[in-house]
Length: 371
Image (spheres, helix red, strand yellow):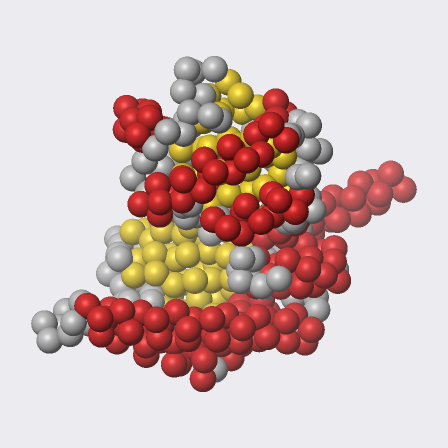
């Protein structure tokens, strides 16, 4: 009898754990035709693009449902036709009512994390910085449709958008930190912090992340935040990689151990990359005999164009690597490179010591490090 009771409680515990780690979405959609395809995609950081969860069903009797693994807070995109809505969900089943056919008006009940996400979005959209930025951005894009606007006037509009975006990012940082302090155990916090990467000081991100309770870090965004803090922040160990050079020989990061390495991301089609190449030549000429080298990762798809650019720009004094997958380049994905030119400066022990430095800034940094 005691054994049976023990098995009962162990089974109950196991089932409760399973329930906690899945969420059922029960939806009603009175204005969506039966038989309409409904798609739910789990949003994920760049390294997981190929393995993102995607579920598809069809509406029947103006209803549909999904069961998803989202016990520690995950972000999903719900698609109906060409419209979508974002759902950030924690460990609780939800009732979803789609008020219209465009997903602009949703009613979600039963999920605290969703309510917190809506609270944050409301605060963000109401900020004067967001409103000013949105207006400026709309004006800038409309300028391309207007025949009476000069290129100079359009450039002024772009400068205004960029300056207002800086103010918006500062406000977003403030709102995010305020929210996290107000809701320290929210499953939303890792997602908010992740979205601040590259827009906030690394120390601000890592300090805030350390303070989060372990339970709230167990989602996709918490895991990837940990990866980026441990592997891509200044002072962290650079991620290992192996990629083919121009002759097809595999080259690893470890092969540069003992030298200062500029891991440079570029492409033959990238105009600012090509403009920056003379600075790389100057750097290699000044410091190649002082424990410094360069490994350039090409984001090209055409090997002939890649090779021709190396020849034309006289970039033969260092190592060139590529898998010719453009933005799906495996090293680019590991290092979260979204734009070119971009780079990481890595010390002889494989530690990242600087990021995205170009021109005189790069030369000054090398002069400071290498005597």
